[in-house]
Image (tube, rainbow, N blue to C red; front, side):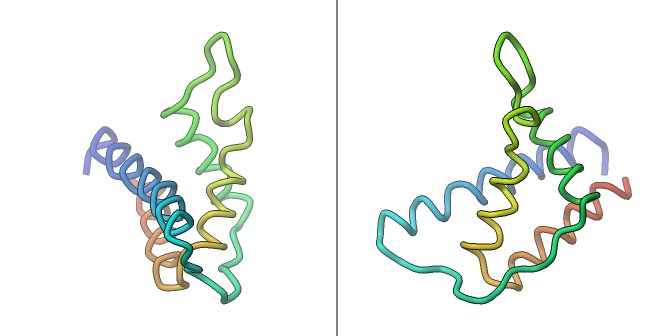
Length: 98
């Protein structure tokens, strides 16, 4: 997998990560009541870098400066079942390995 393809896949995953809880919230559904997976500082740093590629710093702060990675971690923990969290972080690990 090429870096460009990997970034496109991650962007799609992140878009899904943000859209699903919004839609569920609008419908009044609770998606996750179980504890989330523990996220390592390395995983959080990688999320920050990926988010910063998608929303870079310009005349305004980028995603990394805004702490978007913390929001992504929280959405994954609070809104997705453990199996989906594992799939997301496994995909993140594959991206990091490439």
